[in-house]
Structure formats: structure tokens, C-alpha cells
Length: 465
Image (cartoon, rainbow, N blue to C red; front, top):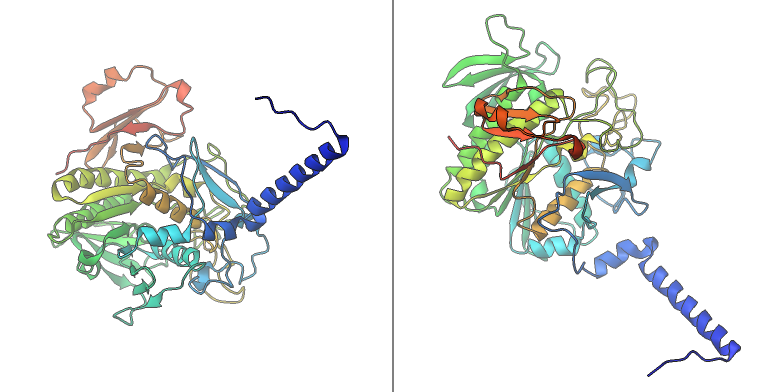
């Protein structure tokens, strides 16, 4: 049957007007001004992500709808990350979202998150950047529900909350080094303290609590930039930036890898823990023009594009140390029914030099230790994207399970030794076979056609000790 449009011009005009009105209604229904409200009422039906998608390589793109909460609508924002309250004059840093290459990342959807974690529990274990992400999560969920404080201690470093509508428990444990530590001198040689850390003795303040949790997000990082004395086997074995001529300075990444080895071993040693551990990788700082205590600041006002800045130096050392221990724990976890997953956000956050409080984490006249904060991230701000990524990983348990990235960038070395693991990174080599005679634990190579901002590793397996 052939359908014909009416030949009557007034009727044609009326139909055209009706069609236009319908398009306007549809546009208004799904326009950006109503999109946040729509998401709350209508859960997303599908995502274009797949096992082929690498969530952690991509670009920051404009998002005119962001942010999805404000500093006045969420009580959970830590004062030092409340950038709008303390007068940050620009708001452009709020208007970006992470877009992975080759797939779509949905905006965080609070009802879906709570439904996924109904009758479950999640603990953030780490330092103040872990708390930064946890507070972002509370703020994102505040569009639906605020939790009730059920903490069993007055210690603000160990808090618990309950989302009663879904019987979901959220907790934060704050062991900055993950292992036992003590402060030996509040000032130390660099003005930010001298600490003893016991690389082979886990901090039991968090390990004794985790058996009851279904999910753990573990991280650590910037406390290793302090002056440190290293203890192993109940004796002093070295240090970092300690100004003690009788001690060998092993740098930060040595201890960083050791503490993750100790932390993961402690988790695997707990008979009752048969759950999922997420490692959130190192979050780089963005001090420019000096260090934290020598005039360094973070004044940039837009994200970098992929390739504008590459992971290198100590940031790369810390990242590689984490990935090596994660790979070993992932292998060992298969025998213990403990799943290890990687929230691989180091390069995601590397591209956001504009997202830190800087001097807008306090009033200008206040005397604070970290006057220009280029470590933590504003709330709202870029750290909200970490919870977008976390929810996507909950949607797809098999996502990114066999992909690791060892960035090459400007930091190529032959036979690079990451403590006990040798990782060979070869750039612009078509055939890596001649280099296999060096027998590394992992060989990573790129060709000129791979646009070398990273080196994709499939099925990275470093033998557990």
C-alpha cells in the first residue's frame, strides 16, 4: 500500500507545524536543562562500553550540564576542597567530563549505584585523596539520599555511614601508608615531618575491619613525598630524603612498592575475606614554579589534551611500582577467591592541572601548612569522574580486566628496573624479538603507528612470590 501526503496546502502546513512542535517537545524533554532530572527518574538502559573498551584512555570534553551537585547542596565536602566557598573566581574547571576513546561513559546515576550495592558494603582505604573520592561519592548520591552516621568510634579518620533505603554501608579508613608508621619529628628536614614506616608490617587498624566489606578501594600516595625512615625485619634499612649520611636513600618508589606488597599480602592472608579489591592508581599533583613549600602553585585553567603532558619521572615510578604489585596480587588472588581490579586513573587525573584548590582551600589570611594545594581536587570537580568510572566497572565486571598501560612518553629506558621486576620499554621498534634475550618479567613495545602515548599490555602476568 502506498501512502500519500495530503495535497491540501493548509493541511500540509498544519502537519509540518505539528511535526515541528513534536520535535520541540522531544528536545525539551531530553535537553540539557532537564537531563539531570531525567537521569534521576529514568535509569540508563544500556551503555556502549564493552570488554574492548579501555575506560582509562581518552580526553576531557566540555560538559555544560556539570556539576551535578554544588558546595551548598552537599555537606560532605571537606573545607580544604571547597573551592567555590573560598572564592575561586573561575567555574570552567567544573564543566568537563571524561570521555574514553572508543566508548561512551555514562554520567553517574545515583539510583543505579545504590541498587547495584543494595545489601552490600564499600570501604575506602587510604589517605586524604581516598577521602576526597569518598566525599565525592556522598555528594553524588546526595541527589537521592543522605547517609546516616553509624561510626563506632569518635575518630574522624575511621567513619561509617548507612544508606538505609538500600541497606548500603559506606566506610572510610585512613592509614596514609597502609603499613605501620609513626611520626619521629613534626618538622623533619623538609618541614613536612619525618616518619618511620615499617615496610613489612601492615597497619592493622584497617586490615582487622575489612572482613565484613564486599568491596574495598585501596590507594595511597602523597605521604611518600615526606622524609621517611624505612624499617624492614625490625631494623632500619634505608630512607627517603632523610639527610642522614649513614643511611642509603632508596627514594620513594622502593617503599611504595613494598607497602603495596605488604598490604595485598595482608588482604590475601585473611581467611574470611573472599571479596573484591580495587586499586585506585596514583593521583599526580601539579605543582609548577616550585614545590609545595617553595612557592609552587597550580594556576592552569583548562585540562591538558592527551599528549600535551605525559607521565614521567617520579609519577611514572610510583605508577609502575603499583602496577607491578597489583599484577602479582591479581595472580595470587585467583587461588584465594579474591578478585583484584584496577581503577587506572593516573593518566586521567594527570590531564587535570586545573582541578586543584590551589590557594582556594582556605581564606587568604589563614596560616595553613599546604597554602597552595595542588594535590587534592576541588569538590565538585574532576574527582567526580572517578566515581563515573567506578560505577561503569560495577556495570561490567569483566571490563578492563586484561588491559594494563605502561606509559612510554618521554621516559624511555632500556632494561628499566622497578625494584624486583624488570620492565623493558621499547619505542618505535617493529620487531621486539631481539630484546627478549634479556628475559624481563614484562616487555612492552610500540611501533611508530601506535601514536606512542602508551603501550598496551594484554594479560600482564608477573609471577607472585
